[in-house]
Image (cartoon, rainbow, N blue to C red; front, side, top):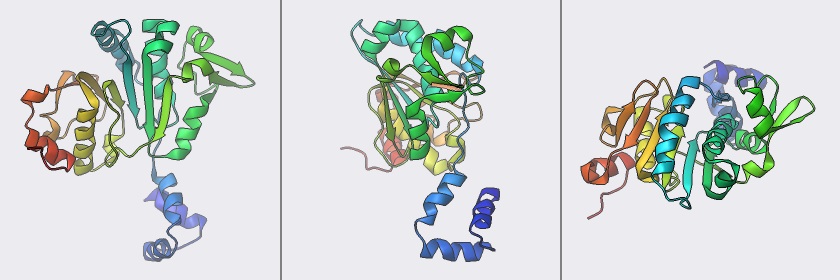
Length: 258
C-alpha cells in the first residue's frame, strides 16, 4: 500500500478509486506501478551458512555424479540485480577451477523485471555491495574500476540472462541446482504451486532446489520434493515413479498425459 501511495503521490492522484480509473485509461501506467511494487533485495553470499552448505554438500555430489565432460547446469530464478548469480559462479569456479568452469558450467539467470536483469548483465557493483566478499575473491573474480567492482567478463560468458515468468513460462531444462530464494513469499499459494511444478520439470532426477529462509513448500507440492536440509531450506526432486502424475499436472495447470 505504501508503494502504491508513493506512485499516486508522484502523479499526483488522490484516492484509490481515482487511481483505478487512471490505470484503466492509461495501460502503460501498470509498468510504472509494477517497477515500484516489485521487491529486489539481495546481496553477495547472503546467509553465509546456506552458501557454505551449497559449496560443501551440494556442488561436490553434483560434480561427482557426472563425467569429466558432462555439463553442469544451474538456474538462478528471480536473480534480481545479479549478486546471487555471481555468488554461484564463484562457488562453482572454486570447485572446478576456472578452465573446467568455462568448459562445463551454464548458469541461467532469470527475472521478470527487465530493468534489474540489465543491471545484473553489467555485473557492476559499488564498494558497499561487495563488502561481504573476501579480498581474495574480489581479486580473483572482479576488476576494480573507479569506485566500483566489475565481475570478470570472461567468466560472464557462461551466464545466460533472460526475462522469465515463473508461473507462466516453460522452465529451464536439465537443471542440476535451482536456486530460488525469497521469491515465492511474494506469490499466493496457487502461484507458488504452479512455479514449483515447473521447477520439478526443469530439474534433473537428482536435481536440488534451494529456497529462501522464510519459505517452505506448500502442502500440495510436498509430493514433488524431499527435504535434505530443512535448516537451509534445500530439497531434492522426488523420482518420477513416486510422483502422482495427476497431482503434478494439476499443480502445473495442464492435463495429465495418457
